[in-house]
Amino acid sequence: MARRIQFYQLGPVCYRISLWKEGVRKQWRDRREGFRAAEQRQVQSLPVIVKSHRSPVLRRLAGVDLALQQSKRVNLALAAGCIDGILIRPGESFSFWALVGNPTARRGFGPGLTIASGRLGQGIGGGLCQAANLIHYLVLHSPLTVSELHHHSDALFPDDRRRVPFGTGTSIFYPHIDYRFCNHTEQTVQLRLWLEEDDLCGELRSEAPFPLRYRLREEDSHYVKEGADYYRVSRVYRLSLDAATGKLVEKQLLLDNHSKVLFDPALIPPEQLREGEP
Image (cartoon, rainbow, N blue to C red; front, side, top):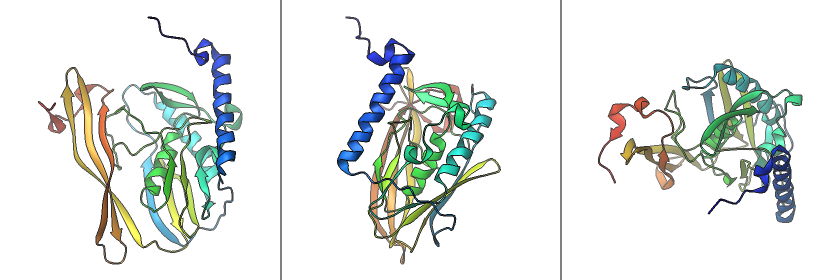
């Protein structure tokens, strides 16, 4: 039996109409649910650094044109300029797309690497997921509540200078696949985001220290062959520690990774490959 062709598959115009429809649907849902997006930014930083991080913009990725990564740097700089200094007050939510807006060529965004349905491609504004990934990593080290997250389901690249646990990234696609978090705490927090040489840098700041601090720990990380395919396997935990004593308060399982390897299996380090698992 032939598969039914979806409306968005009928051509570029139908695809754009489908995107517009999904965007409008999300706007109506936000209004119905009373969504409050943070809008105010300030140059002055809040006094307390909750978490800071930096990630390399240029990475060695097999089969990826370096020009796309150079263009990604421009895209990230534009996005950082839209986000840097944003204040998220109690009851407000951070929305990536509410701040960055439509990443069009007219606004200066260039072609970058995109990922859709486990396949690599390129498109205007590509590479912005690195900014969302960094922000999500900061948020995981805080009591803020993630309200919208779309995980990458496959292992697309081998680890190259990876500084964060596998699987802690997020997908974004304008306008309806967003990254969001809500501030349910009793104090205002702030995001700082900027580029420094070839690194994307970020800080999550607050008015006062939180009673808990957080760490991410990836355990039992390895690769396994199942039939003809390879998978990256690991568990990622979030540890909640008493800020005053350092005592462990809670160990929470965030991710149970079992991600299909889409890069050349020959690039898997032999010492990380386990055989004979079901």
